[in-house]
Amino acid sequence: MASNAALFDDVFIPVRGQAAIPIEDIAPWAVFGLLIAMIFLYFVSTEQGAYALFDGMYVHEYVHDGRHLLGFPCH
Image (tube, rainbow, N blue to C red; front, side, top):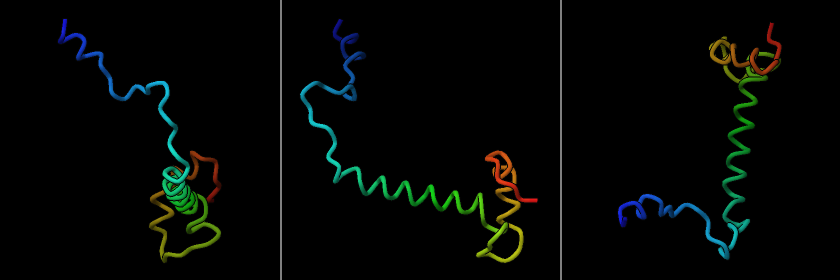
């Protein structure tokens, strides 16, 4: 029975009475995630469409299908 108890002893299940994660620990990761999301959105929606930072059509062709999947026009 001891081996069965070890299988169901999950350390990732929260225990009542533990404090929530402080906002000071979450804020830097939230800002980082928002920055990555905005960079992704720029490349899918705008790059080599209305505005281009890079020469050629390489970025446009790379994100072309994703652009149509998300509803951004490009033609």
